[in-house]
Amino acid sequence: MKKTIITLLGAVLAVALLTPQAQAWRSVRTGQKNFERAWSAYLFKRPEKAGRYFAKAADAFGLALAENPPSRTTMFASNLTMAGMSMYYAGRYGQAIDAMNEAINKDDTLWEPYLYTALSHARKQGKTGTVEFLKRYLKSSPGQPILSGEVRRQMERLEDGTASPDGVAKALESALLEQFINNVNFTGRNPSSVRGMCDSSLWWRNNRAPCAINSLMD
Figure 1 (tube, rainbow, N blue to C red):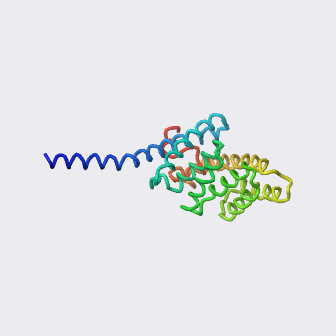
Figure 2 (cartoon, rainbow, N blue to C red):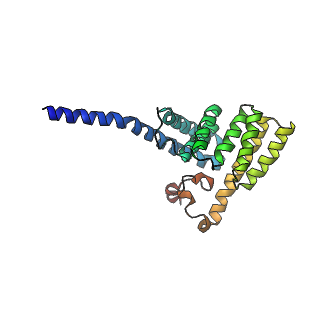
Figure 3 (cartoon, helix red, strand yellow):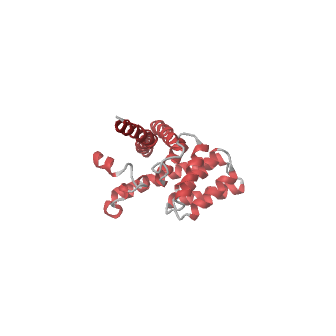
């Protein structure tokens, strides 16, 4: 009898310990799936639909990040970047900055955290933060010619006072969408040269969806 009770207590304790991790994993997966739906709508220029899914993704990633401490999966650089992008497009600029700061701490070679942090500062009318992170974006050697060219132009305009932070954000959002669409089109024209990119944790850079979803859509 005593052995049975001990076994039962051990099982209950194991479930209690695993529940927060399982909840965090479910939140991350919900965030990822809604980000995928949002990304497809974003690239097809359906902003209202994309916004709804980005908001759902931001909610889910927010729950995962609120865990104390967040799970190891939540803190993957790719998931933090998706969280920050979702929060930005959901209009939650302070949360986007926080998530992207965590992403930079995990992997300072990614360009998206710098760019979206700059955009978030711009939307909050913060000129200093916008310029700082646009410079850090350029230093990351992003390899995004359409976007990077516009970043240089808008940073110059912001520094000489001929553009407002909000105007800079709008111009960069337009260039960013053009860059991503160009990347996707290049992938479609040259599938052999970018094989495996949709299987990367950074799949959105060159694809509308991860490989598994792409294969279903073909």
